[in-house]
Length: 406
Image: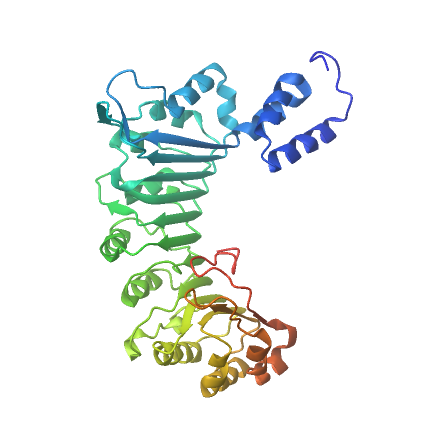
């Protein structure tokens, strides 16, 4: 229909149709709609620019290098600056790619000067993701250009970053970092009222040294974690005492914790002191491995941990079993677990048990959820429908959907 005629449909219906196209990833249709009629232009633009991913090459040709996605976006934003207000999620990914036989030079985020002009134009970004090859520093100029007053979520992956960068995001509430190389840096102290109050923190990786540096920097810089409510360390593969140090920093405010069983010899100093978390309400423990060569340590750790708990609103236990025979073989331990879950002293309102197969099991072996439920008669009688058991083969490499709000 001609672009200068009134729309034949109500604007609310037009917007709903465009939203549906966006939900199904129909970007080409949205582009056509933006050009078809003025009634569809603004909403189509908002949907097309809501999420932007910029790939930055780690190497470029030394001559006649093609324009990078960042440079192309900069041209668009300079022509139509209002489009920058529509960007709510921004991902900057440094990619290596194949190195051709032609002469190349190192590039990367630190040398992508177009980003320095783009970032100040994106004032409405609420979620920023930055990914770079391990130990890659994004550069001082890039750090200086980062100032996003609306940012709520910051996700960093394998990049090298100064911790004080968090000061640039006064409304930051959610921080995710995977094997980030945190570095100290000198900077002017900011007004404490501008310090972000991080509510949820997800830390993953297996670099104990870098995590130790992270803990040290937390002690040097402003109290970013003083208001932390939710902590996910379920994919952090470092010794337990590092986890304890992090819990000590946020023990007064922490309400939700997602952690894992770390295979270790049963010892008193390996039992987490969750009783020291007075506000803890939701606890999820993954990878409780009841395999023959680990079961004794796992049961000892789990039962001692649960006995130390304060009252909880929700407890999630994720077991890795070899078969249903585990329940018969470890009958005494399941009976003790039943007694703890039924205890009036601990008072757990809801318990969700997920029994998953070990990855190396033969195909066709299943864990019987009913058998697990039968092994917990006292807890079932007290909790009723607030005790659930599932064997839905959740992946052992990620269970973030167990507690969705973490």
